[in-house]
Image (cartoon, rainbow, N blue to C red; front, side, top):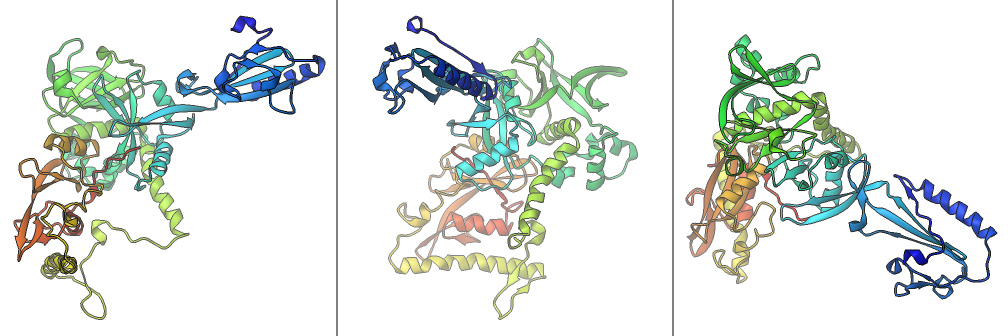
Length: 537
């Protein structure tokens, strides 16, 4: 027990180990002054931290060879014994045990790093130690590296509050430890894809329709994308967004339709003519998506969002619950909130990955862009390839290429492989390992995944059909609306295929089908661009 120790020194050094080393030096000086013949048997308070671990008593026989009368052991206290650091994160503690003759010392100091737990979509968590100045972008890159994911600058760190039914995507420049310090006890970080994080820089008109931008109504002219972004990012002005929203009254379960607009970077509520009410201050608040609006809060639609003060600890009375008529209106308000609060910093975050690509291009071969504008139809039937300028000829070549893919499996069939429709064939299982295939999930689950990963044009996934076990379903997002296309099996000359357009274009497996529609729109409203990906940490 502790009372049996002749003397105990216990020190705690905040955020650095310098104090611990100074104590060590003083202990070594005392060792020269206090030289006794032997070390008495002292009960060991931490036997699992010493070697041998089974030794319950500190005795001369348990000391390292060559140091019969003094020594030290340093170990890390388990994660459950960590404590809240100054920044709010769980700081791991390190314990050092020193004995000098008949005096036993225990010194504890705090690590310079904080512990953060990250969860993936499957509910599994991963504990990482990060410095206090690590940003959300740096942590995402660290997780991408450790999880062996493709770094396409679309990964995000999500602040999730399951009890409140709220979540938001952290900005790339935010410090993770500071955000963790402001979170409730039920809050957690999620690691997932978010393709829409900076999509408004690429397609601003999709996020900001004319009827919601005040200065477009005043000037009565069409919006130019470049002019829209310049006005929104200007430091000396505040873009004004206006429109009707449903707002939950404080302390009541009822929702009321009100007119919301922005003035001087503040959200204000216009209930009646000439009556303005301050709704929220952008500097001290964050905006969250409400993921359980109808079920938990009785919202009139599924397009809810919430303004949450940074100092709020989960009190529902401090939350400003709002609800839009459709997804475009919700995206407009939430994107405007981010621009109002961070301004030009968002554009700098958007440009950083592009600048890194430019720097890397000087040391590697240039990689051709795969954007829609750079993809052209080519004809390689002759000695020299040529660009097909005629759209009719290009579509005909695409259809011919789709039919040509069927011939790739003829060699396998000659070697005795099974029909693609057979459950044991390669064509029936080759897609299981693909990132865009999500197995037997429901229609509602596919909607949830697409919503979480951004709802940008071309976001897609494939799943097993619930109505037809032999068929599959392509879930595709276009203009912030989710559509479903059934992929049916068909047979021709005894060989099985998969088709999305009632047999007009046939494919031997789902991988060929996805590759084709990534290059050709066909019967789809847009090309397949972004696969919905779920990673396990």
